[in-house]
Amino acid sequence: MNNKRILFLLINYFNEKEVAEFVSTQLGNQLNEEVQVIIINNSYNDLTTLKELENKYSNVKVLNPEKNLGYFGGANYGLQNYLKNNDFPNATIICNTDISFPDSDFISKFQTILNEKQFDILGPDIYSTFLKYHQNPYIVKRISLQRIKLYKFITSNTFFYLLFTLLHFIKTKITKSNSKPKINQDMETYAIHGSFMVFNKSYFTKGGTISTPTFLFGEELFVAETARKLGLKTIYEPSLIVNHFQNATTGTFKSASSVGYLHQSYSYLLETFFNEKIVK
Image 1 (cartoon, helix red, strand yellow):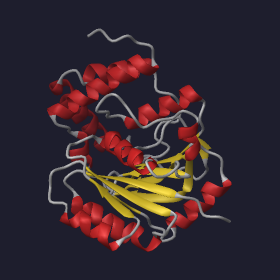
Image 2 (cartoon, one colour):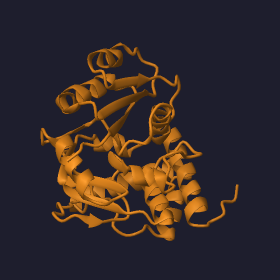
Image 3 (tube, one colour):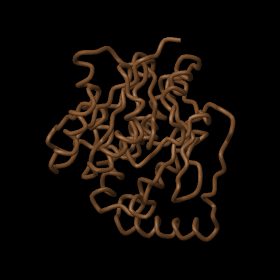
């Protein structure tokens, strides 16, 4: 069985120690000539820690666009840099660095799946160690137009957003309605969680993209709707396991600027994929 090329795209946003630990402890022993890592620096901190990784591992590269490009914006910057000297890799992985792989042979297991299964987009089993539930499959059926409109309304005002998310946060803590057990069977799904997204080479050759005209939040919906539009196959794969050490509080209660970006993103999604013309 021939190994296939895998590209990891990692975003640094004032968390270079976390990025360095992820590369060293989670990828270090699994890096080989078929696995490459590009770290895109979205912050203005000293790059010494990241450059040490570049010096230690021949297949790790650090890029510094000298501005914050956002999650997908940064990932696309890294991918385009890679494509200057290479064809699309067999798999492109965009992932957080607040994660770990319980299986020390995670990449080897993924190589087997990449060789044996047909998919354009793949999401592993992602277990949130803070929320105590499994985040994939993220959304099984297509999100409704009404729900996108609701999200657009909620994010139109920072107070609305904070009130809504606070009430939702309290409700889920009291009722444990966010409880979501692991699904042990692989399946096709509408959307996968953004903390670990796998794009087969076919995603790009069939017309898929991670380039967006906005400073996009809600990457999961952008990918899901792109896949739906192009007739691509998105699968959830339970045999691949990722632990996600997210901070649910800081991840939920966003700043005013982030709420503004969320609003722009929902407006973009409505106009692009739901044929809802946005009144400026």
